[in-house]
Amino acid sequence: MATTRGGGDRRQAILEGAFTVFARRGYAQACVKEVAAEAGVAKPTVYNHLNDKATLFRHAMQAAAQTALDERLAALDPLKDPGGDLPATLRDVAQRLLRLHTDDRACALRRLLYSEITHVPDILEIVTESGPHRLTQALADRFARLALAGRLRVTDPDLAAEQFLALLTGPLEARTRMGTRPIGDTALDDLARTAVEAFLYLSGPAG
Image 1 (cartoon, helix red, strand yellow):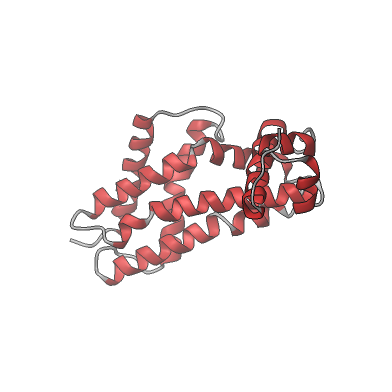
Image 2 (tube, rainbow, N blue to C red):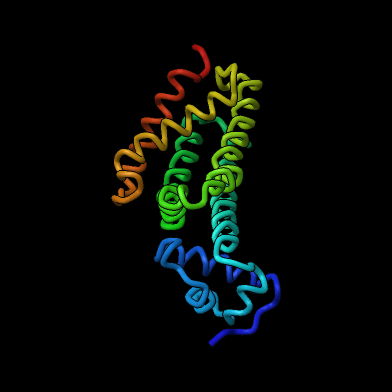
């Protein structure tokens, strides 16, 4: 039975329910009735907030990408004040990012993006704008500040941020077969350690 919610709560519930259903069923097989049941609202309420399935899919993907971005931006917080042990702080950040990259929502988001991009071509732009691009910008800002403080040897913070993230996600995608194979915490920690070591070898302070 549908529950009574405020307008903002209903919209959020619809978007979360829609993402769950799309992740479970795929775009073609998902239906608005199932989304309404998942969200705990009446079917007409879904149409009142988002008038068709394509719009619902776009907004659900954007909301999921924004949630993932917010979590990843929070994972960068230790770099604002890394303390005396920068390698340890970078490993901590790397471990946080890897765990977020392999959680159920993140894997579902990538699977939907890969599978539906030919049917909804603008979904790549929608997801990217709320995700990787802004994460790279935020990380580049952290690296620029560390370089100014003499703690990193970085002349192009944007490139350094791209390289750091690639050192994390490249091996991860290979080992998990694009998110279809689980990976344990020990393996994630090893990936974080080797990525940080490689990054600092290239970009760590001289001496």
